[in-house]
Image 1 (spheres, helix red, strand yellow):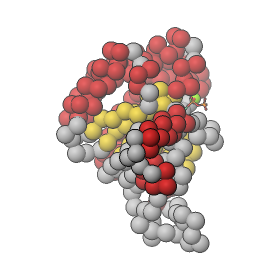
Image 2 (cartoon, protein in one colour):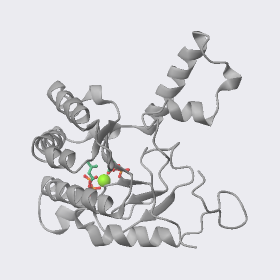
Image 3 (cartoon, helix red, strand yellow):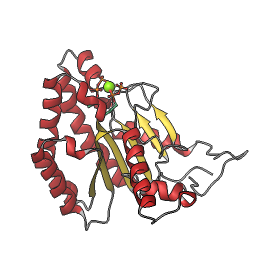
Amino acid sequence: MPNPIPQHVAIIMDGNGRWAKKQGLLRVQGHEVGVQRIEEIIQAAQDKGIRYLTLYAFSKENWRRPKDEVAFLMGLLSAYLDKKIETLIKNNCVFNVIGEIGDLAEFLQKKLTQAMENSRKNTGLVVTFALSYSSRREILRACQKIAEQAVRGEIEPSGINEETFSANLYTAGMPDPELLIRTSGEFRISNFLLWQISYAELYITQKCWPEFTRDEFEKALEDYKGRERRFGDTCAVTGGKT
Ligand code: IPE
Ligand code: IPE
Ligand code: MG
C-alpha cells in the first residue's frame, strides 16, 4: 500500500546562490526568485491537503554571511510579510515561526508576531518559517526548560520522556515531519530539526530552490508514496508511526 500524503513536510530551501550564478545573475536575485517558489509551494501543499509545511528560510549560522546579503534577505522577509501574508491568512493558513526570533530586528519581530496573531484562528495549512534557527540550540533550550521545571519540582528526572521533550521544542504540538526535502543536491541536514526528523524520509533533488516548482514538489510526494517505512521493524509499518 502506498504511503498516504504526509501530514508534515519540511524543506531545506537551498541553492539560490548557485542557481543565480548559473544564470549569470547576482546571488540576491536567486533569493528573489526563491520567494516566488515559496508562494507556489505553499499553494501546492494546500492543494495536496498537507497539514504542516516547515520551511528553513534562515539558519542561525546564516548570520555569518556577508552583511549585504543578510540585509537583503531581511529586506525580502520584510517585503514578504507586507505583501504576501494577507493572502496566506485569507487562504486559511496558520502562520508560525520557529527559531531565535529575538535575533531579528525589532520591526521584523513585530511584523512576525502580528502575522502569527492574525492567523491564529485559521484552521488550514500551518506554514512555519524557521528563522535564525538552529536545531542544537532548540534542543539545548528544551533541556534548560525541562531542568527549570525539575528544579521547581514540577517534573521528576525519571519522568522525562520523548513526549515531554518534544513538548519543550519550538515545534511543540506538531507531528514530526514524515518527509524532509532538500534542494540543490547537498547530502546534509545543516542543523535543521535534528530531533524531529529521526524517522523522516529524505528526498534530495539536484534542482536548486528557484527551480523547485509545483511539479518538482509533486515528484517528491510521489517518491514518498513508494517508500517502505519500517521504523526498525522487518517490513513496512503502516499507520504513520513516528
Ligand atoms: C538558500 O540558498 C537560501 C538561504 C540559505 C538563505 P543559498 O543562499 O544557501 O544558496 P547556495 O547554497 O549558496 O547556492
Ligand atoms: C541551510 O542552507 C539553511 C537554509 C536553507 C536556510 P545553507 O546554505 O546555509 O547550508 P550549508 O551551509 O550549505 O550547510
Ligand atoms: Mg546554501
